[in-house]
Image 1 (cartoon, rainbow, N blue to C red):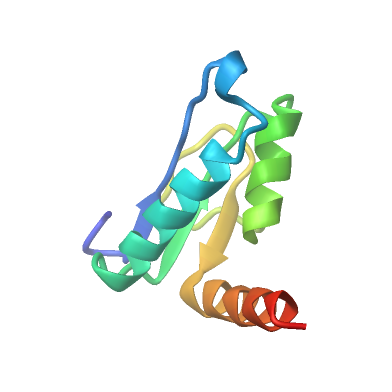
Image 2 (cartoon, rainbow, N blue to C red):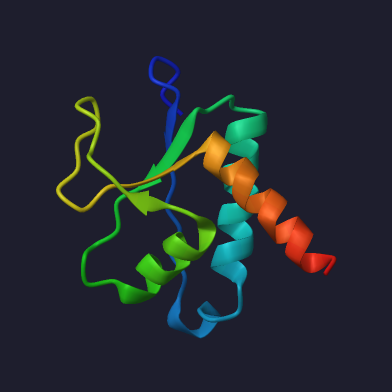
Length: 100
């Protein structure tokens, strides 16, 4: 995490035989939670390749949204961000749905 900005860059790479088993979802969920709670991040972000459809689906399922890249972040790919507030809200929604 960049302590001057409060932003943490996340990434995960899985071999094809490991994809589709919720490993990426669980791993990134854990990393997101740690970045916010222990790292005190205000936002986490990813910059997936535009052609990597499976990565896009994963990031969108986790709550990342494409937005304008902050001036202090360098990337040549689209920028997707997840704020702490959005993460908390999405988890409240997931918890409510789980107990319906």
